[in-house]
Image (cartoon, rainbow, N blue to C red; front, side, top):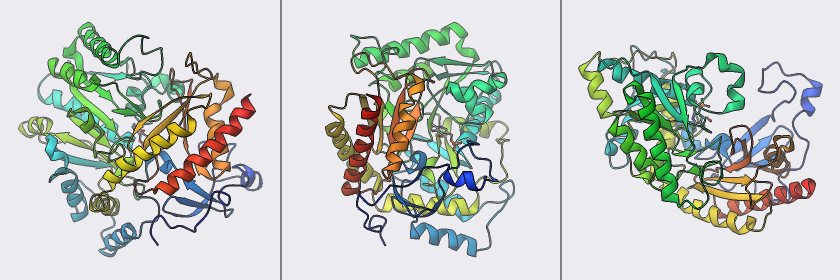
Length: 478
Ligand code: PLP
């Protein structure tokens, strides 16, 4: 069965049923979930873009979890690759002593050839088990680079408000998802500062009357001035997502912003770490989101679409400039995890990446993305609470606002984003909800990030259901 010819459900037959919580009332879960009151939906099988819940309901996965499943669910070729690796008996080895063909081939696949990171001087790949770990590894490697150069005063990072880089202490520290950080403020390193988000839709960032280029230029100047204020000799790196995912709903930066940021980093000998954990690996229509900004980072972190959900894998690709310094210095990066470059995970990931390349799926992502964009614009053009639709490739955010003229968001108590997600799910489509589009704790958006092999017909169904959910919510609010 191809990934797209699942069960033949039509919109009427997907969805309908009770929400999470019902099963929890009968049998309290032994597993500690994110919420103690609400049990997540149990999924019994999945194929392509369809999830079948324990109850028998079928839901279209229009967000791939959190922009993870680039290939859809249940791909037979990936299953075979995993089985082949398991059949070798090499299901685990410690990376301090061993490597595997799967891990080496995966690294080569990502670095070498006309499609690899080597085109940009990214010459080594490092694999860990989650995006947060990849960010922590990037922070430490960046520090080590200057340590090896004898620049020991470099201890600070500069990041941006409304950013999310993960949950581990290091990744959380450089991120700015305020509600998630609040209870752990006591752990904050005091060596991070935050710049204005490159997010023009919100007036708090963008001054009315400014052109896109002027807005970009102002933000670049803000960074330059801030570095002068704190002393660039103390700064290790500037950290940013090329398109901001969870905290802003797929917002690309204004034209020229990243070019300016790269120039400022070079001017002051500061590294540029780009977090492409959510927006990378083809999600925006090119392998790396930074390609569309015409710049090259010193470290890029990748995750989600790397393994496409077939293995818990993430990593970083590292520029030659850093490797050269390490090579002349200690020649080591003393940072390891028991399961890093896991053989089965690497085999699954290699299969995912080979399929994406063989079937030109990233091109398909760009093409289908244009279709989805125009469908969204057409469908929501008159929706009174849809303020902004933005994104690239198959990574689209819909921002909900209380007032389109002022762009004011709903008060958090309304819970617009969560209610929207819940209604869409009831009607049979999973979207990824988000808040923080205004100041990290207010504002609502939903993310659509289906797999790269989604069909036009599936996109039509998704948008149709999403609009039904929106209409219901609009009525409820009014
Ligand atoms: N960076 C970004 C941009 C993310 O979106 C995420 C996860 O949502 C992370 C880092 C952390 O990744 P993980 O959840 O795999 O630790």
